Length: 96
Image: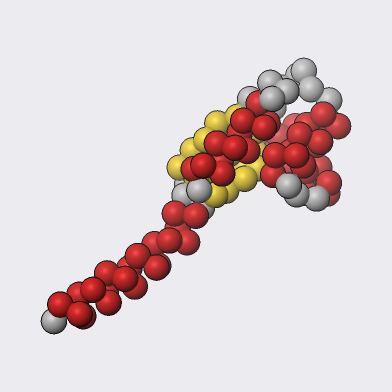
């Protein structure tokens, strides 16, 4: 009986792990200060994505006011947010 409980707990933990890996998200907000290129380059630096992906996020920020630029674990989101804020971009970390 106890081994069945341990196995069930192990399976629940394994299923929850992927959820924790993307439990947070970094939101980037629009401003009237930075150029498109500045934002694109900073997103590439922070998120390590392609230029095309960074351009997509930048356009979404410009047209909608914000974009979810990253999803991940809290330490990763804190790192991404800090890099974006190096040039005084406005970000927010939210739970998914």
